[in-house]
Length: 321
Ligand code: SAM
Ligand code: SF4
Image (cartoon, rainbow, N blue to C red; front, side):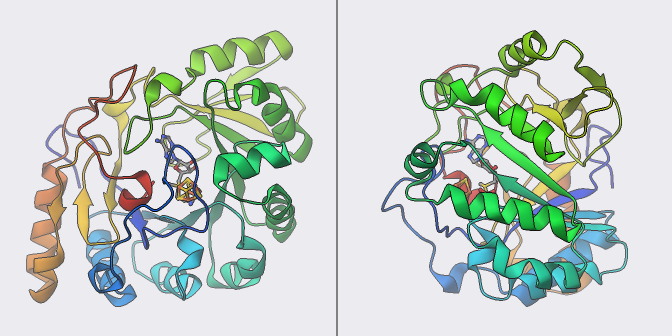
């Protein structure tokens, strides 16, 4: 369906948990509050909302979190989302730590793509940045995902004074592996301070100095706002998701469902629409509530270029990134 600014909304990001097996320094502080399982939507409820969303025009679903794979039965949910009429694509975003053990099941469930987060190629730094993660496990999962034939992309968030010196090595990783790697500008959500973020303008300048043959590629490689760059005859490529310095709100096609049943029409604002009370109502009433939530979608985000200051104070892991 269209929102009140005429944008087609066809993409739903579904958070299945606020829990995670990592603690990335910009996403989840040590000891942060967890939502009790009683408040988290059941898979049956998620499935029902997605079925109704599909009848309202959602055709692409991304399963996320927290870390979606830490919730038992995540692959089963993906299988059932794939069977919903009107849903053309179901994908997953993961930190890759335990992905290896689920790949066969995910493939069998019909998953259309996996995004794996990778912010550093240095083992010790990776561990520090992620609060104890193993780089080896994520790299192994990336290799296995590539070998499985599932469409695989890499997501990297750059932080000033932390991993900014790895722009070229992360890009080199994309060319070496033949994968698309997207640099996502840090957004000031929860504990993230966007003055620590690196603008993609700076990233592109550096990439062009190193690889002058990089060319913008207009092929739509995904559902999102990434602008892609590739090198003639070379596999892999770089995507730039410039959430802060390249406002792409005019083309935004997405809404989010938090693990507690709130529809978030825009990442930047805390306001959302609680669907939980409507889960007791008929499908028609639930659909009407969902449509009302879509119509609440604001024209654009309010992220400042520097510092904190978004309206959203919850952690990214609590919203669903
Ligand atoms: N745990 C999974 C993962 O790390 O891929 C899925 C959830 S995570 C919240 C989804 C993506 O959001 C990750 O690529 C992460 O780096 C990114 N992310 C988290 N906080 C962010 C922020 N403040 N700004 C930009 N991206 C962020
Ligand atoms: Fe966990 Fe993903 Fe947040 Fe890192 S970015 S703490 S892996 S939810």
